[in-house]
Image 1 (cartoon, rainbow, N blue to C red):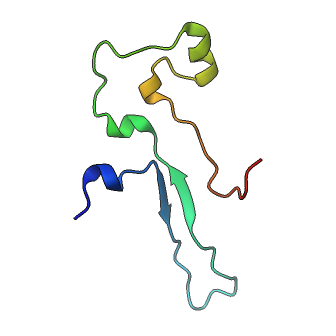
Image 2 (cartoon, helix red, strand yellow; image 1 turned 45 degrees about the vertical axis):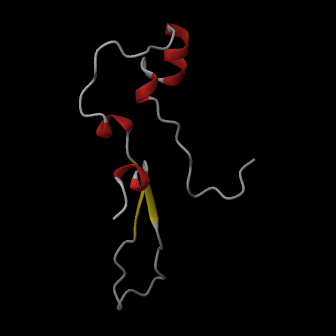
Length: 78
């Protein structure tokens, strides 16, 4: 059995149901991202904080809650 740390990922996948009578081709895998606050449970006291300017750029005051979105549908990158 895999440990919890090995199986952790913020990006989840699922495959939508495709009926045998559906005339359209199957969609394939769909991806979605889960936020970091789901895995924290509660906010511990004395968390490290960003500066006010950096917090406005990142959208959160605490680095532990920052989640950079990586588009799983992009191929190759820049």
